[in-house]
Image 1 (cartoon, helix red, strand yellow):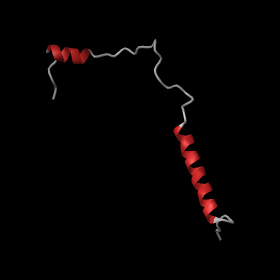
Image 2: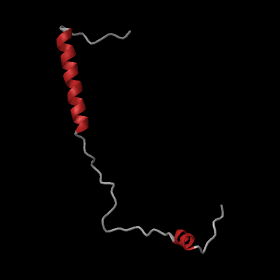
Image 3: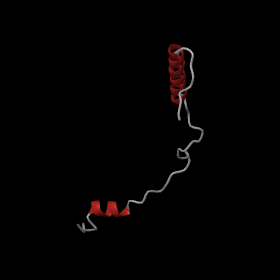
Image 4: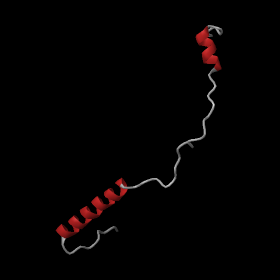
Length: 64
């Protein structure tokens, strides 16, 4: 059988619960990531667009 937490004053308990909830929300808003997942500045991935360039020049006919 589940019972609620015994509390002497329901108004004070409700206010404390509300304050704890707002504090929790503020902490969640202030979270910053601990790991940097961005790309390194010095690393440039080579993008291969040879087929697209050939299609623009008209060397390859469209298959569709």
